[in-house]
Image (cartoon, rainbow, N blue to C red; front, side):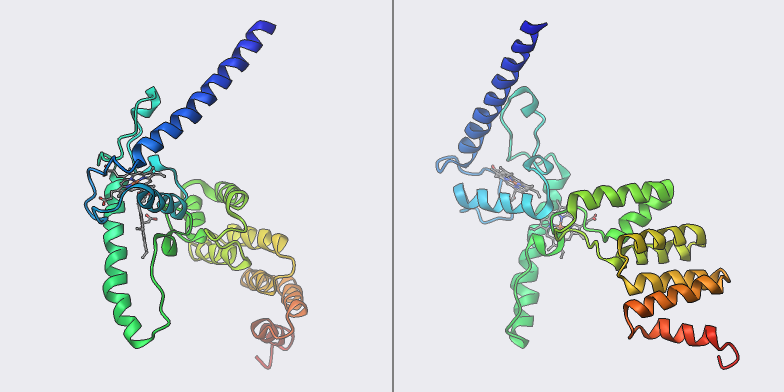
Length: 258
Ligand code: HEC
Ligand code: HEC
């Protein structure tokens, strides 16, 4: 037993060492000045070495992926070399069209815009991707998950994404995201689920006037005027200038005046 433990520890160390050494050798080999890229079709063919490495690292950061998202690593499992020039992965092919798109936007459309307004910057991969390969809005991801797997699945997805991305720039975790998710669910006619989503949002954002406005509105739709009023009141308490909640309160408290 004891021996087996030591052996496995030793083994793991060797594997880690191999990966580290291997990784270093591979990237050095790939980016060495004398080894020119063989298959650049959209990047300038003069790009190589450190410059190419920076561009590629930029792609991984912009999309929140590793090199093997676009490059074939099927041989790497056997410690074979990565073949970066291979075009087998469709992600690499899409990335090529994306590079062309970004170049066209910057060299043509944005250049024209800059003639009108000089303070216009450039587009990069990260401008759209913001650390994710799929660039949907969080509410759309949640809604798709909801339609496939129901409310619990959507909440689990939300919690997972929040754990991973909160505080970054990939997804917007402010109060309005769950509110628009709730609206989509409500439009589908699922009033109970729409309510559960807004209740979760009020828990996450107890200071959010819009959240309690939504809650009031959902109770109003269900004919629960008492709860509608108390939530509109809470919304006004959090933001005295909340015009919608103020208006609803006026109507609810003086029904004749309308
Ligand atoms: C989002 C997709 C994407 C990611 C991620 C990515 N690459 Fe690339 N890579 C490409 C594309 C596309 C090309 C080809 C560009 C062209 O055709 O001009 C390329 C070309 C290369 C080449 C030149 C290959 C040759 O011989 O022509 C190397 C080397 C390379 N990438 C290394 C890397 C490394 C290392 C990483 C990780 C740090 C990485 N790439 C991450 C898309 C990607
Ligand atoms: C103007 C916005 C925009 C810019 C800039 C942009 N992309 Fe994209 N990209 C998209 C959209 C939209 C999709 C489709 C995303 C989806 O399916 O959710 C996409 C998808 C991709 C995919 C396919 C992802 C997959 O899962 O198959 C790759 C790879 C990619 N982009 C790479 C890049 C690279 C590399 C750059 C910079 C050279 C870049 N993109 C710049 C909008 C953009």
